[in-house]
Image (cartoon, rainbow, N blue to C red; front, side, top):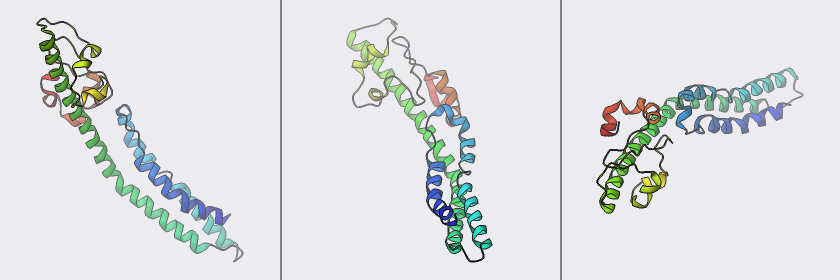
Amino acid sequence: MAGVSVILILWTIPLMAVMGVYLFPANLAVSEHRSLISLASLLPPLIPLLLGHLARRQIQRSGGLLVGGQLATCGLYFGYGVLVLMILLLPARSWSLKNERRSRAVNTLRGLQELDATKDQYAKELHITNHVAVSWETLHPFISLEGMLIYCEGRDGAGNMYIIGNLHERPGLNPLTKKALEDVTGGDTFWGPYS
């Protein structure tokens, strides 16, 4: 029993550390739950630590019949080290998530600017002067192959559809995107004419 507990300690702590700290979902829809997920990620290393303490107690109570006390102690030191490391990495992960969200906001703004230029190109090439409504499918052949808009299939950095609108009007920012990214954009001034 003690050997099994020690093996669990040595193999599960690194696995749980990686799973708990680094494999958060990247979807913005769950961003408000990330702090809870961060705290919950501290729970998996506690299981091997508990098993390690149980193994040490069984070894000590066996009166010398069971061996592996030093291995259990080594596993516990390793487990506590990983737990401390995870606690220290939580602020870094939070900072990384905020930068990721800021990058999504910047890419959304670039997409809006590129969409604006694509609408102008469409109107110039087809000699359209009125405010006719256009769709993503209509604009798709006019999208620059060098830009990022060609890869997004009409979706912004938050996964919502761009609001294309009519020709000779600026495309609009999806209200869901604006709300999802407001903590990293600082409001309407970031979005400029697209808000």
